[in-house]
Length: 166
Figure 1 (cartoon, rainbow, N blue to C red):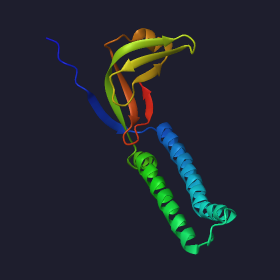
Figure 2: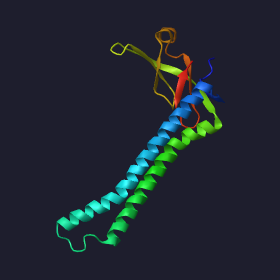
Figure 3: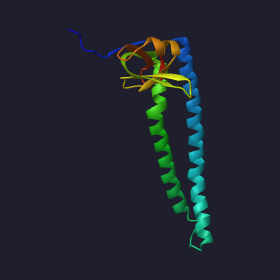
Figure 4: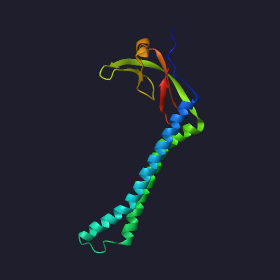
């Protein structure tokens, strides 16, 4: 009697190339967060000023109210800081955890479907993984592997960045 397939998962240390990939990714994303955050800070102070000029052009009394300026700027700052922090926690923090713990997860999955796309000259295997729906494979692996076979995928433990298959 055949044993039912059980998901097999374990962790291993990241290789030097994988660590370098994560380091470059983290540095690039961190710079992008700082750029976006600086832009949001500028917008948080410029927008109330622009709206004051707009109100003044329409003849509103007390268009340059300090109270309106600071309340609007505070609300925009709160939205900017909150959205940046949430995005950081969801994305960049996980990459930083991967760099800190230096582990990758290896999953053994079954191939559910094979697909060759002639226009791209690419071979894909669809797998029963919760991380990746499909993986691009070499022509040799595409011909060697069949539906129902097992293939292992590697991904970073926290941010779930796909690293490869074997």
